[in-house]
Length: 126
Image 1 (cartoon, rainbow, N blue to C red):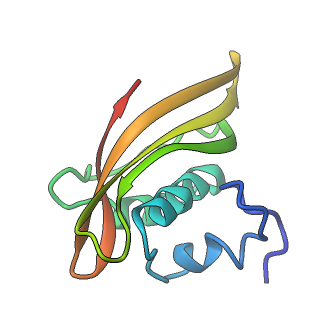
Image 2 (cartoon, helix red, strand yellow; image 1 turned 45 degrees about the vertical axis):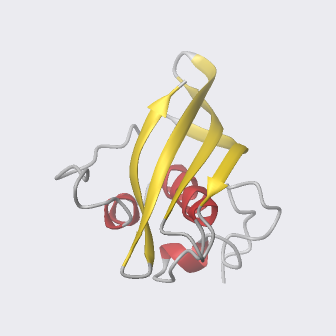
Image 3 (cartoon, one colour; image 1 turned 120 degrees about the horizontal axis):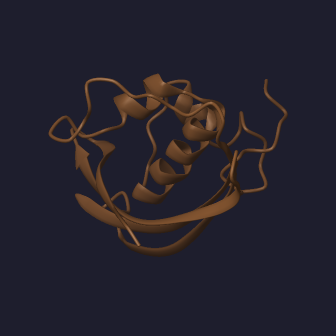
């Protein structure tokens, strides 16, 4: 069991938090999927990122920048996306460090639930 803190910022260890989704569980909300996708970026899990991307917008492959270290996630806004919704929006700010130093990216992401699974559709950077 992985005892590292989860990169998503929940305060839980990775295995008890986003690790359960990365290892095959289904995120119950759009926010949980957003947090687990941030964690997948942080740990370099390309497979999970592609598997949780909506088929209509999913790229055929995904290159991650190994020089980017994802440090912190802050959820800014949530619209719908509960287990009772079919779509949702999660706005977040992700803090990172790369060769140019520390930076932040804010995105408003849309999600859809397909066959009971939340999927990332697209995002608009702010």
